[in-house]
Image (cartoon, rainbow, N blue to C red; front, top):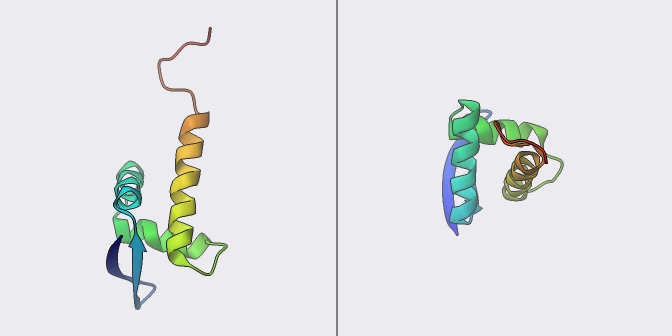
Length: 78
């Protein structure tokens, strides 16, 4: 478990996630052209749970689900 501290909406907070989730969040931020802090702030603003770490994990899960549902560019249907 890796714990990171950041400022969101003017207050300090920390999030503890497994390294694999941090790696996925970095990919998500890069794909969106955002900083990690901006991505976490948007997850915080949209979350439906009281726990930010859980919201981050659910955001990663949703991101991968959407990727799995979207056909890859250049692929052809059989």
